Amino acid sequence: MDAPVAGTTTAEQAAPRRRIWLCADDYGISLAVNTAIRDLVMRGRLNATSVIAAAPSFNRSEALPLSMLNIASTRVAIGLHVTLTAPFAPLSTDFTPLADGAFLPLKDLLRQAMLRRLNREALAAEVATQFKTFHTAFGRMPDFVDGHQHVQLFPQIRDAVLHAAKENAPEAWARQCGSALPFARRLTDRKGLLLDLLSRQFRRSAERLGVRVNPAFAGTYEFGSSRHFRDRFPRFLERMPDGGVVMCHPGFVDAELQRLDPLTTQREHEHAFFMSEEFPRILASHGITLTGSVPDHAPVPATA
Image 1 (cartoon, rainbow, N blue to C red):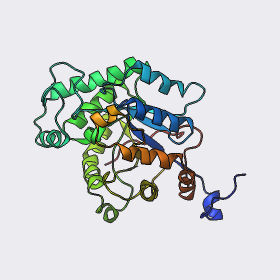
Image 2: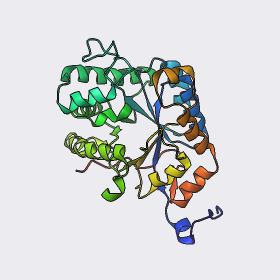
Image 3: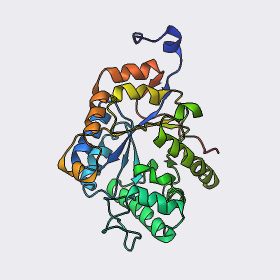
Image 4: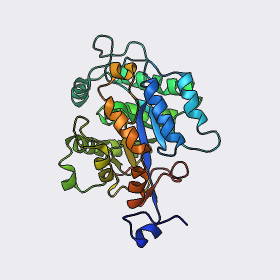
């Protein structure tokens, strides 16, 4: 029998552990980030990652070592990180709108989506192409689908993503970003609150299509804050139900990452935390485990 974890009661130790998805976003963005994510998977510190199929550095050579981690047993769920914002460029032809040959910046994309000004046919073609690129690299469709900078939640885009998931990967689930915390607890997290609001319609749309979603989500924070990640992480686990998703961004920094994304050294801080002995102690103190591959049950059907 395992020894009790410091800071937990006998009842907490005896209670069944909840199993969550701890998902590292942005696999494929750079070789250094890919290496860090695979390292954590091998050590049992992650059980999901989502892939930027549109990243310049992503190809079959980077898909293969990730796939190989699942040969003996399923260690990691692998998802598609639908990407529709700059500095990345479309994989499909004739995509619009563009800015200097790349997707629009996040704020511009959100504005166009809220005004319903995006080209539906172009969106559908691009999302379908990213699913196809994933399939070409991995030889199968993704286990789940989410979005870089949470674009899967935006009006118009959510319809394209959910329809593509239903058509191309009917067994996959889609990431919604509704919190399990009481509303009053969300008011201090502006980013999380916006995602929570956008997720309401996303869940309704998923339910109509019969696409499964995760029951809850956490992991947002202001990346520029001086507060240590280890101090934030316990909050992500509060009230997280079995099958919930906690998003993270561990990685190492290289020139390609610096070229493509402003989130750099914070990725190394996250990686260091997940490598620490403090990480499993925090999981245990909240009655949560990642031990033994991915959660046994799939996310539940969406509800409003």
